[in-house]
Image (cartoon, rainbow, N blue to C red; front, side, top):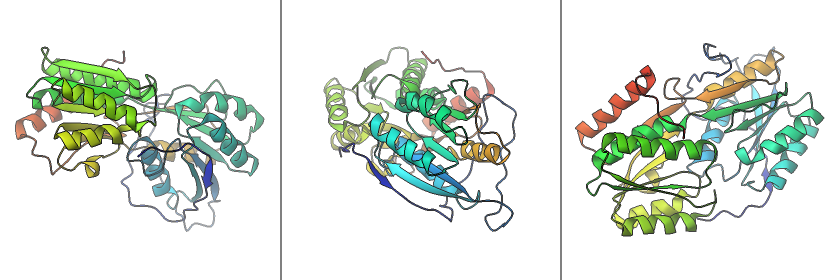
Length: 343
């Protein structure tokens, strides 16, 4: 399904939590910082904060946007804030309008969930010094005291999935499709390829980038080309992967997902997904703001701090030995015995 990128702010005020397990995510600026405790929503002593979330794609995209929407919406009640959501705003001008509007209306935190919006954050933050801005996935705060940055070490889950994929593959031909070669998409692709070659150095790993985060047709075209070259495993990143997953489903090819659990799109073909859990980071930002710190920190989710998880599809008949090999690689990454590459 192709998403049309027009600005349509949708205000969703959330006073109760959506069920989602909260994970403690570390801050790269303060690696040993404990996860924030959640203030009671019923406590009259805790003022309600207004938080705006600007998403590049639909909040239920089963990919990047849904991961942040799920985290923020699950914490609205426990952390005593209201949340407004403007989604499907990949166009930077539309996202900038939404950011400016929320800041001018007194929102205390504006989260823009797209690396393409970094320049806008850099421009707007000095104009609204009492508003905190957060953006990702990137590690740059621009030296501004009211900017938080967050990122994902997606090369870690990518490495695990690539390793499992190569062990699972019979043709030893794998296809990896990225959107644009930046941010967590870049890291995931690099990690997946490295993991696959670590499992089987003779494997052929095809890699390409479509140049678009949203064009599912380009994803489908790339997927079809790899299947024609005997690939029996595919993977990809961004909301546009629905196109590639459709090909995997129709051609009965294994799929590995990232950013969100994608097993519902192809229950018989999705093997596993790297799932992002941003709840720990959102907690830390809200706690910092309540303590008078409006920015200046960068946060990173990893396998080690629980911000990234490998979710296996119980409907897929993955051999026990292959799954065990994946678990071993996770443990090796967390221990530091394996450091997946970033380039």
